[in-house]
Image 1: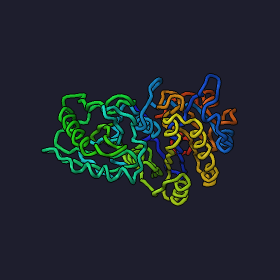
Image 2: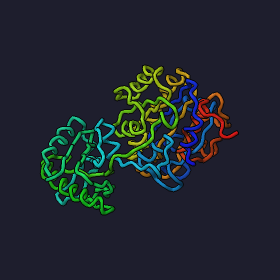
Image 3: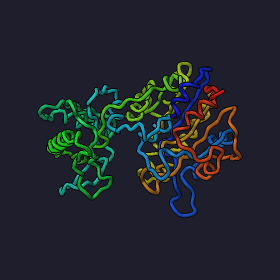
Image 4: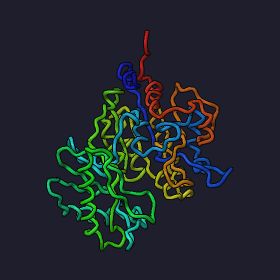
Amino acid sequence: MDIHTLTRELQLDNGSKIVMLVADGLGGLPMSPGGLTELETAKTPNLDALAALGVQGASIPVKPGIAPGSGPGHLGLFGYDPLHYQIGRGALEATGIGFELKEGDVAIRCNFCTIDAAGKITDRRAGRISSEESAPLAISLRQIKIPGVEIFVEPVKEHRFVVVFREPGLGGNVADTDPQKTGVAPLDPVAQNPQSQRTAEIAKEFLAQAKKILAGHPKANFHTMRGFANKPSLPSYKEVYGLRAAAIAVYPMYKGLARLVGMDIVGQAQTLQEQIDVLKQNWDKYDFFFIHFKYTDSTGEDGNFAEKVARIEELDSIMPQINALKPEVMIVTGDHSTPSYLKSHSWHPVPTLLVSDCCRPDPHKAFNESTSITGGLGHFEAQYLMALALSNAGRMGKYGA
């Protein structure tokens, strides 16, 4: 019996509100032995005040020792076993911008990149090219033609865009072409099973034509392809939890993941304060709110310790506005750790804080990696966080006689 079988049977509707604030890549590491992490360094009086009222622990996004992508990391937080429900990044990105995938479509999340005269990558994100500059480049790739294939190219944000291939029978199991490092050439798209061989061939031809079209651009003169994926199918939040759920996110991929689990995408916020304004405006319409904050992840990936600290402090500054709404359950967590020291997602458990009027507070008066390790929630798999949220909100009945 999985957790959703229980939540379907035991769910109650009592009008309570749950807020899940996800600071992407929240967890960190010291830059030198014996030092402090980003979260330990940041001045977070509001989060620390919540810690005194709540209970915290260290959530494991997938399994111990596994560094997750953002898709599996968020699926776990949403209560979906990330080993059972596997969603490629391409499907998330496409759904996030409102593209309606059909059965058999293959969606790919693409990154503009910079290559040198030898064809080696010098910048995996083309200098994080602006959306205004990248959108026309993505649109220019719509001229690519491959016999028998319907091709869609859609700008996303900054260096990202989406490509969708539509042809009967396409498989979505193709390896990424991003080598995840500079100084080497992009990889060829390689099928991981026989059903995806045709997809890999189409992708290879698409890349060859794109290289010629982009050749003259000073920064975005090529692109990589990641997260090849067919359309997924997941049960909705309403079905498994009985919740009217809303997502307040800036980046399309996170909107896409939320939409795939049946959340409504509300507002067009571009800043953290605008996200909180959207939360206030929609407070009476929903039971569950997912608020996504990206920049604790991107600063960690850039290895910018000081900027990640600043972003954590920015997040802390808006906590009183959320508290003023008096949600029955407040959760602060991350989908994975992104230590500035590693400049990448990591396997480390993520600090997680839960506050309700019926939680069992632990002794901690601060919220960070050190306190979460010994917090009252212990070390737990992220897929069980929603069950904890529902119970603390009075939305779960008793199991058994």
